[in-house]
Length: 324
Image 1 (cartoon, rainbow, N blue to C red):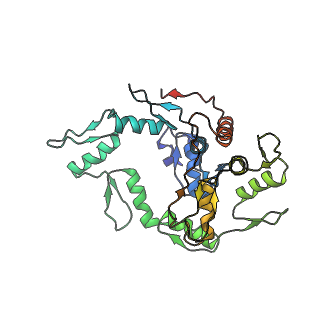
Image 2 (image 1 turned 45 degrees about the vertical axis):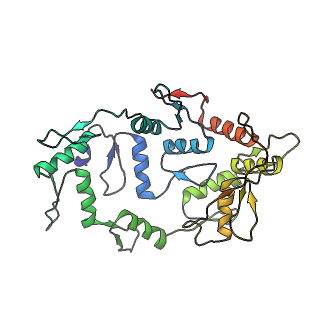
């Protein structure tokens, strides 16, 4: 316990046995727990992706809504971005307005670094002094940072499986996770519909959304249409296909001839042709040319609905603002 209190500003401590990680913020601790559990509790309602933190999910939502609230403040530039990080990268690489560098003052060097710790690691190359030494018996390796030393320790310790009567030890975290998923995968059945799940979190989410009567429905906004769907994606697809007659994404496989309103629907269709290779190699998507000229000022009902729903879910006003 004494080791964990070496950093007084890091109040959030990992509760897993044998883990000494500490963090200064709660969201960092929550993201760290994903490494132990393998679960990503924040799921996107519009696609099948899940994330370790709510912040990551919020940023992902922008990929569905298309909102770009962060405007470039450089004179004459009207570019906008969905995240402050993307805006910073744009300013640094396009307008070359990078932050002040940390410069190595060693004679004849003059290398520049974005972060102070990068400079500290670099200085070790000049001095040949690596302050972090491995204390494992028979190992004399030294490292420039404590983080590099911790990674090295895992070469000696590995990641032992915590399942009872299992002596497997993964050399890497990925190897450990793969072993857990393939050798100790649990199947939890839903007691109402017998559908199987591999962890309790997804089972609880399934029960809440399907069997509790609280499932959110997305109703078609077209006059006279009473159709409703369980996901925003299915509603958008319905509007594009049945109300707007869109079939812009054609299957490129010879002899198929099917076409879809959304590119994501076409990607899902690919599994029919190559179920084993869909994730590894997808044919290039060909978009059909629309004969009618599309309006540049008026969005389709599906696009307007998607934007409105995303704005509500993110609790945003929709106004663009420059990065402070």
